[in-house]
Length: 137
Image (cartoon, rainbow, N blue to C red; front, side):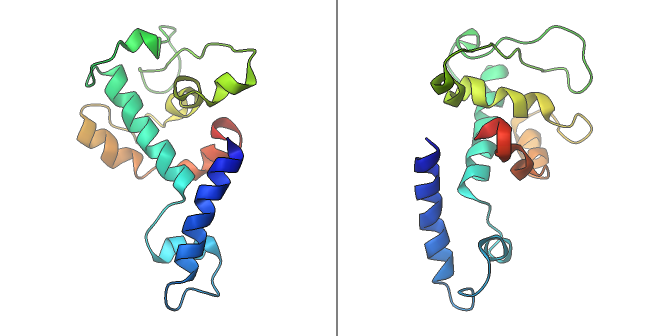
């Protein structure tokens, strides 16, 4: 899985390097100048949006097939999800497993759950790249 992500990301690296005036800049600087994010960050962003749609019933799927709300009162936002334990390493790549840690860690003081549009707007202000190293890769 990680090899696939790296291969796809390499395509974006090569493309941005071919743009006029960006050849000698590091990849992260090229992305910043182009107002882009890495493909992994974009995947996480859209995974969070799909998670929102499932949790709030905006898509025609059974929410219980993907997630279970964690009813324990905890700090943070009120829509925490229960993360099921898995012995199988391959299962950790499943959407319903890989998105839970990030979803539960979304800052309650920033993220607005009132509507899909407000959710999209507010998660775009969160630095999603900090979640890539261990929770999401």
